[in-house]
Image 1: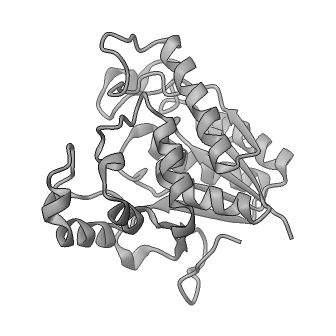
Image 2: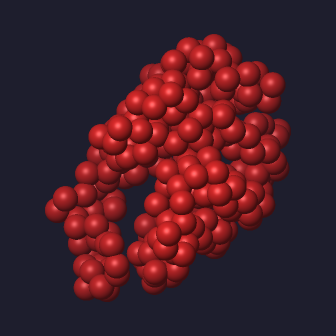
Length: 262
């Protein structure tokens, strides 16, 4: 039976990196996939763009177009935006600017998302873990706003997108020789993104969809350049790193590790 999956993300490109595989898989299985973005990523860095590009409406236009392209690759049926401004990285003055997502009123923002959930009759909503994956204020706000919106809309299933920290660290150490040569490769000793394996309730196998996921990431060229470690990873290593997507299900912990969101 087809169902509706709503993915709530902070900025364009987050959806491809964190949940691109499950989006493509859900769409391939006939489910409706809806992408909701809190912002248009106006303050994103621009490694894939010419130097001197202003962080203004022009960047928002570029990132919106990239999102449309990535969404077509992933089979997304609808893309919508909550209308907030990118808050910038943690500790920046922009975290407190009027109109930015991190400073938004919780109930007001949740009501905007709840309206989409209600309209779509969403069966499943995904947000981020409590640290937003890596501490970005907009990602942390996605966690709180998403949980509140699900309460308002009565969405039955809510999952927190995360990384299996233990898996990623193990991969980096096992492939240290080849991965260590890639630009911007994290140091496994300092890697603190995501969640420990013991906290994860749901591990989704998306190895059959890593091609779509990688292509969707590449579509966000202003943020993920061809020189990024994401796109420089050998195909096998990319499949090991991104061939699974991990979630923490809200509510009582399932008796066994789940393998799908429906």
